[in-house]
Amino acid sequence: MIKLILFLSIILLSSCGGDDTPKEKPKPVALTPDDVGYYMQMIVADHAGPKAQLWLDDKNKPIWFVDVRDAITFTRTPEEADNIAVIYAHDMAKNPDYRNVKDIWVELDKAVFVIKSRKKGGMGMPETIPFSDKKIAEEFIKTNGGELVNSVAEISDDYLHSQGDMSEMNPNERMKCGGSMKCGSKK
Figure: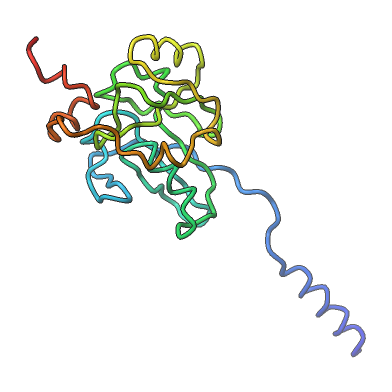
C-alpha cells in the first residue's frame, strides 16, 4: 500500500509541472484616445508619426510608446522588463498620412526602417520609421530624406539617443506636424 501511495504521489507531483507549450503572440490592438505613453505619460494619439505597442509575456494589455524609437530604447535598457512577447509599430508602408496614422501594424522584427529623415517622431525627435515594404521605404527616402536600415538590430544606440536640431522648432507645431514645419505655414 505504501508503494502504491508513493507511486501515485510521484505521478501527481510530476504532472504539476509548468505548461511548456509556447504562448501565442498577442495581436495588435487599436490605439484609443485614452492610451498613455510609457515614458512621458502623454496621450499617444495626440502625436504625429508612427507609434508602438509592446507586449510583455505576463500582461494582458500593451505598453504604449509615443514613437517607435522609445520602444526600441526600452528593449535595450537593462532596467526595463525583458520578457517581451512582441512589439508592433504603425506600418508606414500602409499609412501615407504621417499626421494621422491608422491602426495598421507591423511586427518590429519584420520591418525595415528609415532613420535620419526630415520627418520627426511624436516629440519632434529623430524617429525610427517602420515599413513592411522596402520599396515604399525607398520612395519615402526620395521625398523625405533619410537612410534605410534593414533591421532593428542595425539601429545604433547613438541614433536612438540623439536629440537632433530642435533649436528653431516650435514644440506645438513639431508635435502636430510630425516634425515638418511646413504643415503649419501657409506658404
